[in-house]
Image (tube, rainbow, N blue to C red):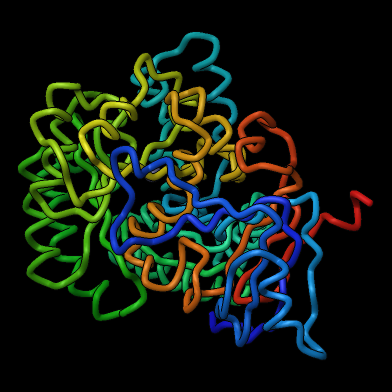
Length: 422
Ligand SMILES: [Zn+2]
């Protein structure tokens, strides 16, 4: 979607977190630096940030006739939140299997009864395009209300060339349904379809990739590396294929078991590896500092009832940049990234500032978009998330509460709860 070309002054923000971009994803102790201004303001012109600083300074230079001003007193201004992992295009219902799991059924038992991701694949293949678009419209409205400005969306409930191309096309068409900026990812290697072995299906994904690139709608190729799905060798062959064809890759890794997923993703040159719940500490230490970003998904661990959590503190100690995401999908209907960040703080023992950097600047780097978003500084897009709290850390005290005041994309206010609250 193109920028709305918005002009807007945001003034008198009780707190404004610039999250300054120093040219690389934040790592180590820098993961927790928000670069706060009290009584902060900014000017947005033609959809881009023109200036940021104390209110008095900004008003002196930028208080022009005809420019709308948003009084952000009592509010906290963050760079627009960036959701870097979602699977919003699916049909079918999986609440019954969640109830069964809560009552003690294992994943293997659910799969044996025909549940799991494969059940969603079958339902999604049967769903009409109109119905899938309607489902996307609802999901996007809810994700936007959770503070998100840019959203990564994956295919992966099709798993044949024809269906994957249909889903990617629907994701591209769905841009008309939302002001969210969408980044589209092809996830052919999501699970292995029933009736095929992993080698045979890996070969099929190799064959799909040139057609997907020819279609020209997706930015990333996501590859699963998980014991029982795709082995490190199978994943590696897909990373190499991605590199040869010039499409950047991402990786679903170690969500269910320790699968050498983290090291495979890093060796494969993935921009990010996601989940990492079961990545062993020794593997994190052995791999050490990376350019690959660790995208951690606390709500997935919560809903999947994993008996481990990703070791976020060790990733940060090893100078791996950490991002956070919600993992909206057929089995997780959570949509609010603000809630995810609030949960992530105690879940992973992250400070609120570390969590906020993980949902803004580092998420922008995970999507290769930090050149124009992820922090509040002149030249970047006027994408902002305003919270109805005085200090950014209060986001993490309000677990599950509605704290989003406004969502601004390209200088245009696209969601607001201010009137409801006054
Ligand atoms: Zn996922």
